[in-house]
Image 1 (cartoon, one colour):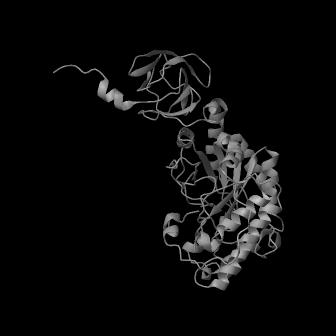
Image 2: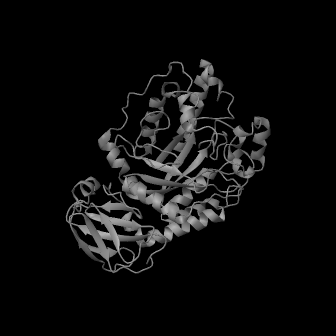
Image 3: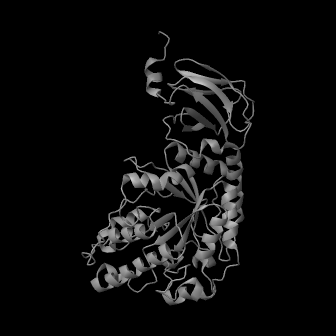
Length: 436
């Protein structure tokens, strides 16, 4: 993922001009919109997934970009592979944690920018089964995710700091051809050796463009091998979904999107990074993603031995406990056209509006500008009915407890007679004002 110094957007803006691709594209077309809707149905319903950044950098505990940011020589850095031997069943702990957190899918780094492969590759000896670990860590992850009923995603970095052609491919056509065949070959291995894979999550395309990477041919191969898979947009093709990073931003074109975010400020394990988000913040991020029609991919950075930092566990378990009571407002949520409040966020499913009150105002909760008529209301976690009064400018939910009945966010479910839509401009223009 991104360096704290150089953003991925800055990498993309400085892409080197790549020579024309020499390989002919497959004649098979990429999947169309109708097929995309079929393939992505489960993903839209899931809303919440776990990202896992894990590699040799996890041994150092100084951020996943440590090799680049500290200019560690390749010969020095690759010695870490002789020490990287995580404890057995680490991936089972992650999958069980994801299940407790209410996450429905997982995406793990099979190869990050450092170039070390957690999977068994015939194309390099720089992979876990041929180094100290002596085993295929991707296979363990896939087995663990499936055992918990979770969908399986593979992250794969196109950028590679270890491969000798990883930088010179930008200016040397022979190097480009070698490197592209290496990358395509590893993607083929990932799409071939682990059964059905649900997500392929490309990352950083530096230093080539889509033509240089032969991204059309890349995706055609992927869909030929995995016809039900979904792919992101980071091989510089549109893919099936967009990937705003460390921010929640719906795609302006209406495409599917997923916000990937950390729980502190690092993707990989960073021993000194203690800037942890509160569970409430993560819950509200999830609500905002669901409100705007997107997914929330929340990251863990296990240590080198595979153990998950205790703060990550605490945060995820708190989110999962909240979802046990309020998941109805998240899973399968529709885009919501209500978003204005000083103390609440919103989600929607059909004609039901969910008001997520994060800063409890007391015995009365008010929503202004709602155009639909409320038919009934209840506290989602307990099912307790909520009394309400409504006029043309506001709805007042009355008789509530003076302190929040649910922690850290209380949800009021309001059944409406039509899709709930908010119009605050009308409130400003038409609400009666006293004469002066």
